[in-house]
Image (tube, rainbow, N blue to C red; front, top):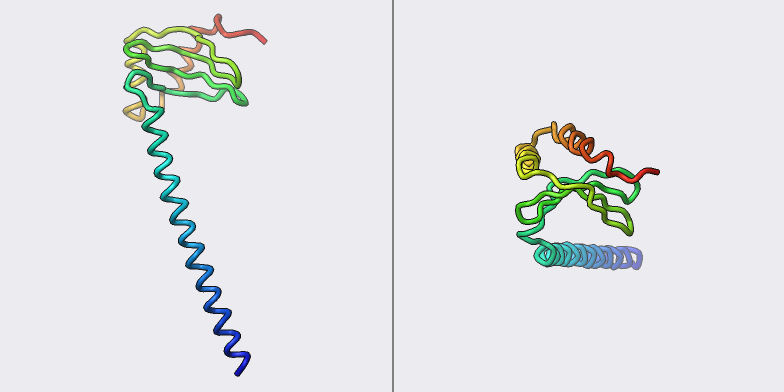
Length: 124
């Protein structure tokens, strides 16, 4: 009889631990969602928008950014941001449309834009 009582006690403890674990998971998910929404509100801007980003190396990116009605191609590194060039409004709108329509030819278009600014890229 002592063995059965100990088993029941162990099962009750296991259920208590599982309930606490689920409770902690729920709190974690809710907190993460709240923080994400808070950060999104802090960092979103109606005047600056990243149209596309392409990773070119470890912690190095090339991005097309819209600032008001102008489009810029910038290079981002760990401790450096450089402007590579500026796109015309028509080129920027075409890139934005291709992204919004899910056109897979965006990489080709980005390569064409990058070829345009190839001379301004820093040499190794």
